[in-house]
Length: 504
Image 1: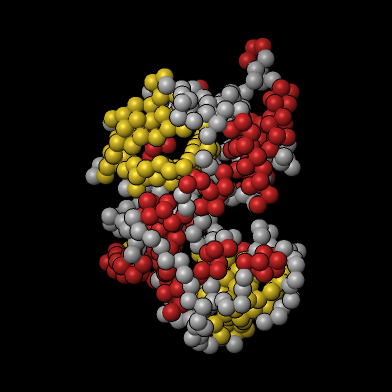
Image 2: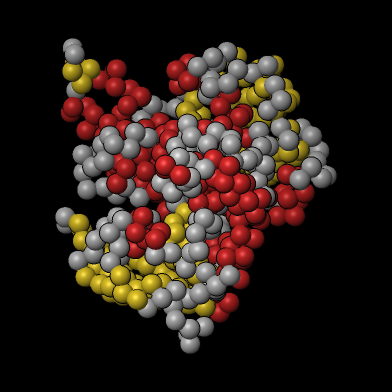
C-alpha cells in the first residue's frame, strides 16, 4: 500500500480559532482502495480537519494534495470537482424537493435552452438507488422519507461523480442493521474501484470490521496510525483518551426502593402491544431491541407524545392519564430524546437558557426572567454533571456531543423528576464521553432516581442496566436480571426466538 500514490494527503494542517488551537500540525493520508478510520473524542479535531479539506475552513499552515497534486480547497463544490466527496452525519437535504433533485442539486442535467432533462435526471438517480437497494425511487419527496432513508440519499450523492476519496462521517448513526449491510457493500464496491475511503465513527465494531488502518487525533494533535488487524480496542481507546476504560459491571444485586412507575397492558395501535413492567427507585432498566421494536414509542407514550389505545400507567400507585408532555413533566416523568440536536436542544441558544428552558415561567419577575436564578441553576448542574464549557454564555451548538447530552440531562434533572427516561444516551458520542454518561446514569440511580434506558448497543445496555427488557415487534419477549443475561440469550430474545412473553 505504501508504494502507491495517496488518493488524498493532508500535511501539517494548523487551524486556530480565538483562544483555541483546534489543529496543531495534523497530517493524514488515505490510499486508493483503502478504508482508513479517523478516530478521536468529540472535540479532538476530526470535524475541523474535514472542514479544512472541504474548503469550509482555511488553515493557517499546511498543504492538501489530491493524488499528489497540491491544491487549495475554497469550497465544498471545489472539493467535489476535485473528486473529494463528503457524506455528512448531519443531513443537508431539501425536504420539499424530490430525491433526484437532491442527489444532483446544483448539477441538474440540462437540455437545450437550459431546460432540465427530467427523464435523464430520474433515470440516472434510479440507477444509483438500485445500487443502494433502497425501496424508494427518484421521484419520491425527501420529506416523506425516514431519517435512515434520508441518510441513504446523502450516500447516493457521493455516487454521482468519479470520486477519488469519499469521507463518511458517522454514516450508520441513523441506519438499521439491514441498511448498514447495504452501506458496507457500497464501501466495498468503492474500495474495489480504487476509491480511498475516510471513515469517521465512534463505533468500534464497525471500525474493526471494515477498515485497513486507524489514525487517532487527541486534543487537535495527531497521535499515530495503526494497522487495524494489528491492534485492539484497548490500544485505540488509550490513544484517544489517554487512559484505559473500566467497562466491568458489578453483577451484585442493587438495593432498590419502592416502585416508581408501573405499566400494565399498555398498547398503542400497531406500534406496541400488551406491555407491562415496573421501574423502581435506584435502578436502571434497559430496553433493548431492533429498530422498530417499539422501545422509543413506549417512551413517547409515557411522556404524553402518543395516546395509548389501552392499558394503565401508575406513578407510585397513582393511576395517571397522560395526554401531553406538560402533564408528564408535572407528574415527575422526564424524557431525554433520541435526537438531542433536533428534539432536545436549541443549538443557537446558550447553555444556561437550554438548561432552564422548561422552568423559565417559574423564574420570571414581572415581564423579565430572573437571570441570577438561571445562572445559579446552570452552575449547579454544570458542576454536578461536569459539563465542560467556557461559560454559560457559550452556544450549545459549539459543545461536543457528550457535553450536549449532559446539557439535555441537566435540563430534566433540574425539574427534579421521579422517573428519567433516556433514549439512546450515547448516540454519536466518543468512547470517553460514553463512559462518563454511563457513570452518570449509574450515579443517578444510586441517588434514588428510577432510570429507563433505551439503547441499540448491546455492550451499553449490558454495562449500564440492572435489568434488561428485550423487545421484538412491539412486544416484550423476555426480562433479564443482570446476572441472568448472556449475549446469545439477548440476541435470541430480540429476534423473536425463545421468548417468555411477560415473564418476570
